[in-house]
Length: 114
Length: 171
Image (cartoon, rainbow over all chains, first blue to last red; front, top):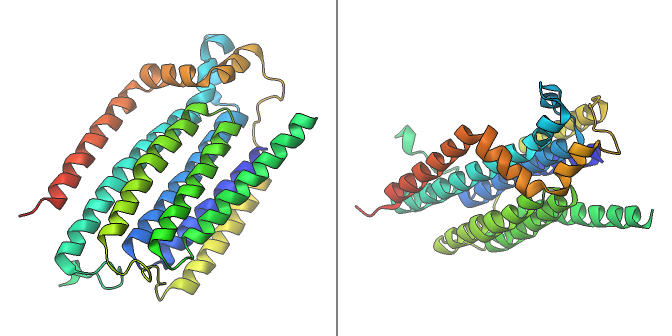
């Protein structure tokens, strides 16, 4: 079960990577980045459910440390927070870029080169 | 055993939906359709979360990704021109495909080869109790053990909102 979840995560990640590198429209690139974030979350949740965390062996015994088995899910929460911040800023950048250059084609954006 | 078979079917349906929708997101020409397919992919991932004892994340996925991020993306798509033919490829498309396929092969090999320290199939009592009540346990983990990261995440969101407002302000 772990392996198939991780392979699903890898497939999603590579689709997202392909989208980021191959799409021309900046919003399409942002959507592909969201796919990659999702892939990472799938992997984290799978680890959380199926892999033994090292913290379980910490002093206090299994009963004290049982909650550390959810560390992967906790990290996934932070990934979701980071993704939300990223998309808010990314779309603000899209709007600012559209006002300034009148195009959203990333191959035509060269503000830093002028 | 019947329950197991049912689980298998649900998993493969969810996985096929997620991957299929993700493939279409990077392939369809219309950006608006891509945004809608992105929602389908997010919902598939939410289903996967629900299957592996991550109930809180499944709900957060629907609320934040489908309810927040996807709606924001659709708003941005609506504000832009050339929506119907916006999803053109860049000149480096073949290289991107090659890179993605190579990474896919490498990571899949690594995943299959690695020796994972798996949890036992019949979980010891305390662990089974955690998985019965994941949202409450996850909450405790976040506000006790990870409280600093939790506060920093709040500051990050605050800074992102201020930054977004500053970027789109009319001068």
